[in-house]
Each structure stands twice: as structure tokens, then as C-alpha cells.
Image (tube, rainbow, N blue to C red; front, side, top):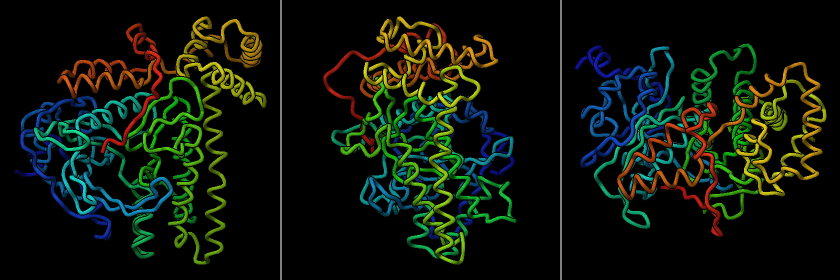
Length: 491
């Protein structure tokens, strides 16, 4: 079949620029075919934005591609090599169960990776079976699409298919494959791999590729590799601030899970905070709380320092000067993060301009929320719609005093109360992927074969700032439990 005919019929328009990097960065390998694939959930809107024919994608041939049973024309499947610090310990990693089909060029000329997750063993599987279970793949689909709707840079989910095969974990589970879409899968860990096992020219090739793909407007007359470092720092500072603003806890911020593009990636043990507590951690393997909510900004800086280390040979021929350049760049991360966070928190309180006392006003509210175990999301919704009686703070002297200070602060800005209310509605989501709602959807899907619960949840999460009546029940808190909520990596 000619490429032209396939583009007309399916919309696949694939390129493979990653294969033009040194061969050590990847291993060419086809997905392992599965027995009887079945399409479970498909992202029509995303498919159309990518230039794909959504009807063709849901046909038998389309599903065969999502299952790895057929390879689109022009695809050159490969598994990417990378390394990383996992909970602070460096190790060799790589795509052990994921295969990059290629890079789709959408109708606007934007290039995105199309990756199959759970598509079989690769040279980087480290003894794993290369497969994935249905529950974790559906979790990633739900959370990643919710993050996109919240306005947070993220990988996207195009489809989930069941394989008709069983994967063995603690129990036997139905197998599945997720089709993941991302700006790229370049990670801090990709650069760590190059620095550990490659040459300086390998690092340079990777850095040039990252610049061309994600930062094409970088001025070549300057130190372009220092510019690369600064641009990645900016994107990560903005990204992690957005996480904090909605109470998102990634759960596994290893360096292989930090992208150069600034997208959220890997939704294994992630969750959203209910009651505000900076020490909140959900991951069952994070016993020390390394990746707790309050630690996420710090870990972002730590990971970026590891990225800077890989670029040292490119920053300057003099080692001492290279270190100085890297340290100066990294030292700006904390201020960038804080600025992004403070701007976002001002918006959540309807504040358009800046005053020195704003941070103490914000911290005062958060302190009250923590002491009273207030729900993070719903507290800001109560403030947005003047429903203070919905909070445990209502009527307390501390809150009354804080509220008066907030109202006076609002009155000192030129924008109207209506403008402030609209800013708050646009900045405070009515719904988030509540952990109990996600678990409810996964339970129905995996154990009962009922996908209606998940589809309704996805629909509600698709417009978190609409503040519609249909969202009310999804804003309700879970039933109190003495057992803490725990998440798992889902491998």
C-alpha cells in the first residue's frame, strides 16, 4: 500500500527522526502480537486532532495497530534506552514494555510520539514480561486526560485495548495495551544514559535533537546548550507549580519520569490530595515520603541538577566554568517555581495584581485548611461561590479575620468583584479525579466488565471548570476510612 493511500484511509503520517540519533539510544524491535485484541476506550477528539480517521482507527485493522499486531506503513518500531535515579539510586532502565511506533505529523505540522505501552518484551525489560494489566492502563488513560482538561502539560492517551491474554502479578489479571501520545519521550534519564555510557558527541547529538524538536527558536549565537538547560528548567518549574495548585501527587518522580518537553509522564502511583496536608504521600513504595506533595518542588530541582550534570561537557570546555554556569542556572529554579506557584495561588483567590502581603494571606488560608483537615479542592470552590458554610472554617474567629483581610485585599485592586469571581472560576476546578471515583471506575471495568462508570467519569472530568450541576456528585468526598489510601506502580 502506498503511503498516500494510507494517509487518506487512516491518517497515519509517520516519521522516525529518533532513529537518526546514534544507534546506542534505541533498539529496533516489533511489538509482540496478542491473541484477541478488543478496543476498550478510544479518544475520538485526540485522534481527529492528530489527523487520524477515527472511524478507521476503530476498525479491525485500526485495533490491530493499537494491539501491536499490525505496523502502520512508515513506522519503524523501537524501544528507547535511558537510565535514571530511582528513589535516589542510579540504575540502567529503558523501555522494558513500551515500543515507539513513530512520530505522527499532525495537520498543523506538529510532531508527536505514538507509543504502545504493554506491547511486549524489549532488550530493556530486565526480566519483566513486557506486558501491562488493564487496571493500570485505564488509570493512566483517566488521569492523563483529566490532567489535560485541567490545563496541565501531559502525555495523552489515544486508546486502550485488551489483549485476550493474562498477565501474572500478585494475581492473574487481564492484559491490556495503552497507546500513549507525547511531545516526545526524551527524559532527563535519556541524557543520563548518554552521559554514563556514551561519548560527548552522543550527548551533543541528543542535545541538538532536543533543541531542534522542542526549542527551535533558541538563539544559536548564544550558548545553545545553556539555553537548553534554562528552557527545561522553566518548563519544569511551571509544570510542578501546576501540580501543586491542583493537589496532584505524582508519586514516582524518578529522573526517568521527568521529560525535557515539560510534560507529566508515568501515572503509576499518582493520586490527588483530598484533605490538605503537605506531607501527603500515596505510593506504597515511598516509605520515606521522598515524593510527598510538599517535596515535589524540591525533587524537581534535584532532578534538574542531574540533568545539568549531563550537559557539563557541552556548557564550556573549562570544567570549572561549566559547573559555574550549571549552578547559576539551577539556582534560578526555586524562584521560577515559587513565582509560578504564587501567581497561580493569587488567581485561585481572585487576585489580579501583586502585593507583598499576598503570600502571608495564602499561607494563612493553607494553615487553617491543614489544621482543620479541609478538602483542598472543595475549600477553594466554597470561596469561589461564597459558600463558606460548606467549610469547617465557617464561623471561627480565625477564618473571620482571614476573610476580612481577603476582602480588603480584593477591594484594593482595580478589577471588579465580578472579574475576580470569574478568575476564581477559571482557576479552581469543580472536579478532579477523586481517588475513590477512579477506583470505582477501575473496579467496575476490570472486575465486572462494566465500562459505563469510567466513561461517565471521563465525561465529567473533561470540563473541570464548567462548574455544572452534573459535577456535584463527583465533588463529594469519600466515606471516612481508618485505612490510608495507597497506590501502586502498576507494573
